[in-house]
Image (tube, rainbow, N blue to C red):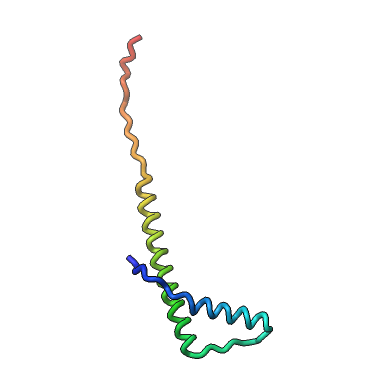
Length: 84
């Protein structure tokens, strides 16, 4: 099971803010210092790893739910000695 430590999303939020600011300022590029780029890469890697783990957990839960939905029906022949 995945570790439930909090993912640091601040670098992603900062990057999105920089893109938004650049777009509104009609800039053609953004420059990230290597330290910010590394933090962004680490944050994205953590996020993607966590999402992949959650996806696997969901797939396993769905498989288990599908298996538990199997219904067994037993039928006997009944009694044909119907006396009226």
